[in-house]
Image 1 (cartoon, rainbow over the protein chains, first blue to last red):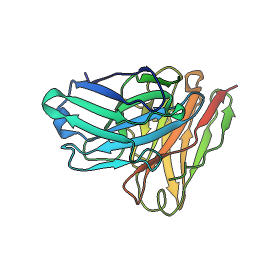
Image 2: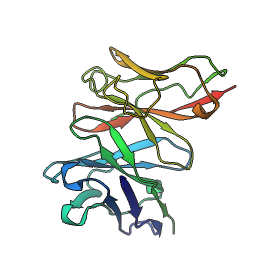
Image 3: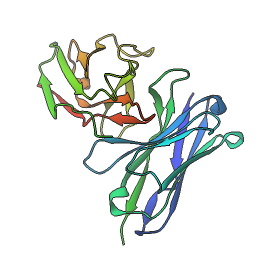
Image 4: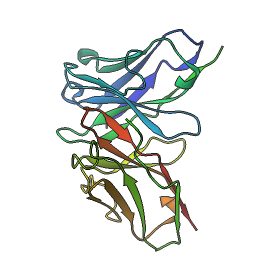
Length: 119
Length: 110
């Protein structure tokens, strides 16, 4: 079955960096576009970034452009999100999300990893 | 990239139908037939209900249906059940090659 397992969350200090990982299994990872989505405490879902199946195309929300970098290692079936210059407002649950093959929509979500930015 | 606008809450009795609206702009909802809807029970992963306005993935109940008119998309839940109580989010592709979620709607089953 399709599994997306995020890791790398935890407590981090402001202005530090953090790299989140998402281990994918149960499907041909190299053929699917992938995304990161987050949810701040008590807030709604926020789309963050997209990587095409081969990472030749990446897109970012304006709110994170320049600080977040999405990447992927297809042979390792892993998606990454590098977060630089952490801010308290980056606190939240970060989800790794798969896009439906050839369509627009997010069909599988990981359980999320919690990032807490605090000094 | 402003969030799409959804009502904060919608409620209904078991068996009733409810509709959740999702209002965007000419740069997102109006521009494409790429609206999707998600059900989110707190503490669990969100679940895809509808993609590309009105397509239902296999395994999703036909009690969920989607539509769009102009800048506004809608999700209708018919035959409301206790387990439908959750948060619901719309999402749209945008003209800047990004995605944007709605503000979210809490559905309460009375």
